[in-house]
Length: 497
Image 1 (tube, rainbow, N blue to C red):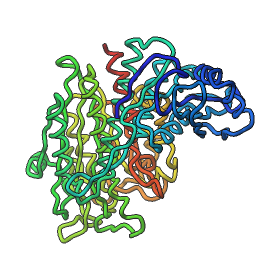
Image 2: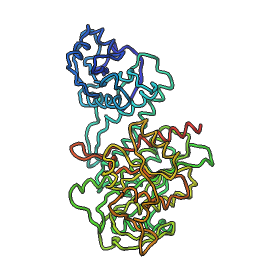
Image 3: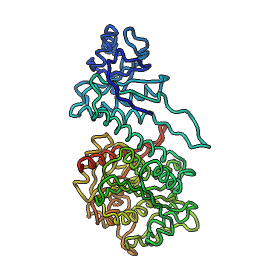
Image 4: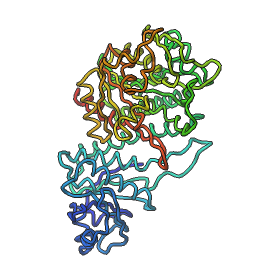
């Protein structure tokens, strides 16, 4: 789906669907005022009568307004003018997207960026408009020969503004669309059924990406990982017919010798729990347990699309956690790549067993920092629900960067403690550390486990167990935290430049 930027008058712009913003207390945006004047005051009268629901994002569609070139005009509520902020703006954009892509119009023009968001420049407003609207166009289609289906309509949307489309504004739209492209990659991988999206599929998609962009890809097979001593990682996929893969994607956009940012993604392509078998209810949603790896793939797509002047490495730890005759047992002890031994108290606490070896592997890149992303703990869902990802870090400046990017994009995270006080819960009588800290503070002890393998670099861990996917009628991958991570990388790239 293409997002264009254009200048012009809203009331005379030829389109099948024109989107304008209005405030629930009657205030009109500049575009809405122009359309209202052309239509003889009809917009203001409808808003005053309460025909449009007050909540930001609610919509009302009008057809064939006299004096207006558009065949249909969609009014989008921006909420109360005194309460208008970035969140209300995104809600309005999402409402506009539902109206545009849920209808039959073949083209659309959206004017919502002409409503100034307090504290945010027009560059930000256009970037967010491009990202949110492109994301609204997302439709999941199974790959051939299984899948098929039509793409969302319209195929192109114009962001219409009254002022000139300067180069920085055009670039903002390009960045927003590129982030949405990365989100779509992450969503596609998450939504793919486990019989298609396995570790080998991840490797194939990475190679395909490297064929389309100047990226380098390495795929480590089981024998390679055995030579490296990744006993913890390999213990997870032992009973699966789909072998483990460690996939490494290099984007060399910075200067030679610049330390890279390394992103590490948990890629459990299906999680049965292993011998510690999960209950049957909603077990189909365990295909989303590769959300961290999917987000890394999505971020690498966006980084490559934007040709960011930054060295970035994506490390995807891919495995399938199955029961079977060769499966790991509770009570088994494995040796990690770092040399630390781990007692496996629960085979369903498997993500950390992958990630600890991937973090040790990341040391070889002498990284500027490492961020791992994982659907790691149900405890994080209990703590934060579906609105905020859990953030843990051994470096406060890095945590502050990530938190700021979460606020800038609405893809928010909340910092959790990483205190040694909890480390006693990971004590083992038979190994250096156990992989389970018990029910109290489960998200914290999981992060503390990972911190034992991240002492050589600034590190952050993002637990997306509650934010990486949604259940119910809208069941599917959210593509989070691709917006947060891409904003973080863009800020780093151009700060360095």
